Structures are given as C-alpha cells and as structure tokens.
Length: 437
Image 1 (cartoon, helix red, strand yellow):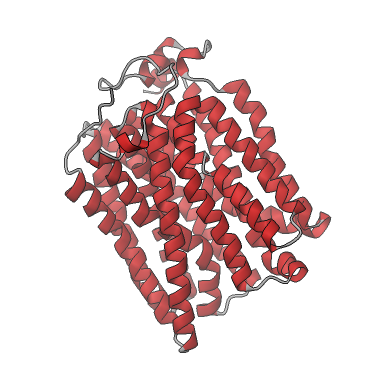
Image 2 (image 1 turned 180 degrees about the vertical axis):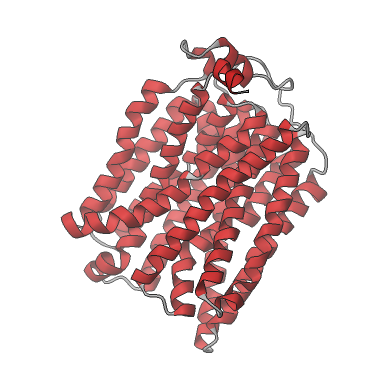
C-alpha cells in the first residue's frame, strides 16, 4: 500500500500544509486582542466590559457580512488570487491595531480584520475541493481546520512575551507580519492541479478520480449568483447546520476562561494550562473527524452516508457536556476533559460539514456556499454571545451563575443533534448532488 501511495505522489499534502499554516495565522491574529485586554488595553484606554463587547461584536458582525461576499469573490477571481488578497488585507488589518488610539479605532481595526479573515475558510475549502478526491476531503479539512487550535495555543505562548518585551503594539505588528511571509510560499507553490507542471500524472488522475465530477479543473473562473444557490435545499441544509453549531465554538472561545474562573476560582495564570489541554484534545478531534468519514468511504460506503454517520456520532459525543459543571464539582479536571471532548467533537463535526459543501456542489460554487454558511455561523455567534451575556448576568445577580452555565451547556449539547435532524432528516435525507448549468 505504501508503494502505491508513493507512486501516486504527495504534492496535494504540500498544498494542504499551506492552508494549515494560513488557518493557524488566521486564529493567531484574531486572538491577540483578548490576550492584551486585561494587562494593557483596558488600563491604557479605560475600557469597560461594554466597550470590549462592542469591539468583539464589530469583529463578529464584519466577519459574518464578509462571509456573505468573500466566497462569491473567490469563486469569481480564483483560489490563488482570492486567498492572497484576503491574507494581505487581514495581515495589514492586524498590524493596524497598533495604530488605534481609542475604542472607535479598535472597532474599525477589528471590523477590517473580521471582513478580511472571512476569506480563509471559503478559500481553504475550495483549495481542498480542487486538490483532493472526495474520499480524502474530510481528512484534509480536519487537518487544516486543526490550525484553529494551534493558533489558539500559540497565541498565549507568544503574545504576552512579545508585549512584555517590546510593548503591546509590537504584539500586533509581529503577529500580523507573519501572514505576509506566508504569501511568498503561497505564490511560489500554489496553483490548480492542471497548471502544476511538477504534478505527476498519477496524482492528477487520483485527485480527479471521482466519477461524478469533471476530470479537468474549472480553469475558467466563474461564480454562481446567491439567489440561484438559495433555491436549493442543499444550500439551506449547510446554512442551517452552520447557524446551529458554529455558535457553540464561539461560546467555548469566549467563555471558557470565565467559566473556569467563576466556577472553580482559577486565576488568569491558572487557566492557561487547562485551556491548552482543551485545544490539544480539539486538535486530535479535528483530524480524527476527517479520518473517520474517509475511512468509511474507503470501506465502500457511499460518501453521503459516511458523512452523515460520522456527524451523528460526533453529535452524540457532545451530549456529556450537559453534566460538565456537576462533575467539575468533584474535580475541575472532569469539566475540563468533558469540555475538551465536546470541543473536539465540534471540530470533528466541522471537518465533515465543511466537506458536505464540496460533496454536494460543483467546484465553481464551493467558496460561495462556504461563505453563505460562514455568514450564518457568524450571525449565530452574535446571537449566542448576547444569549450567554444576558443569562450569565441574570443569574450572577441572583448569586447562582452556575445555573446560567447549566442552561448554556444544555444549548451546546442539543445544538448538534438538532442540526443533524434538520440537515439529514428534514432537508436532505438522501444524497442529491446539485447540478448547475
């Protein structure tokens, strides 16, 4: 088997490594502000929690709106240029934070970062659809998507040191500049398979081995109008699946440190290691999620059956989070591990739901579909932030904040089962590929 793999070639995995590092940079850049908030920015600019909340919402709203348009643009101008433009803009937006002199300045910088960072996932999913056959797409997606976790781990390991050594402005400048370095490798290495002269014929044929897809790349750059895409129930399955489950990831990102602090008395220093543990578990979950459905396909399963079976398994794996707080009373590590498993299950789910876009739609529409789903997920993220804030403030005033977390964990546990039913029972119970003229 290994000899067969060697003969096929591995250039597609080199391409995937570029996408992995871009995704890592994406999450590194977006996490810098949260690590500087308490020790630097609040003190210098006199932020209230409401000020910071407005800055966060500026990012989320711009990200959601950016998702709506950026996928269409990438389908229109192509992956190579589209990914590059997105990364150039978000790198300069990240660096631009160093120039902000007040709350409004940071809101503008965050909005610019949000709208430009929205390009990462549509471009990444389109890259995977161009370079991998369906049986490997979920694994490839799981691998590059694990870059979100690596970025979340690298940020607390580097940003505080940079800020303490050279100042908070330099933390934004240095992390933002990393993306500009990535561009050199992207332009040197990436192109669609039909234009790569050093790609072996066997690997090219393997990439295009899916019978239901064209055997040649879509060399002509084109896009499909949103209104046409919205006429398909497959589009709504993807949109609603992202709307229901993406917000859970946002909740973990923004409230995990606070949960550990409010419920178990962990200080800012105390939570660093538990958070690293959670994201390490999540990294393995992301890769395993992609591997599992791919393994089902290799065993002869239909692609659609493999995706929805894997997603159902991961939906059930999230359910124990309902008891995370209660078990955490025995030892906080029970809660930490359960949350880690739930977050890992989200990333495993995410690897597969992203891949359903490239499974059901032709390559020319993949970035647009991904963008529509990302926009829905971004809107859901704003709504869950408002819900969590209102619930936790209410129960905190009553002296029973743990009830607020109970309710939020119930929401987290139910989201994936609900999304699975909507996607695979109500909207698209059987495999139905979309045909676009």
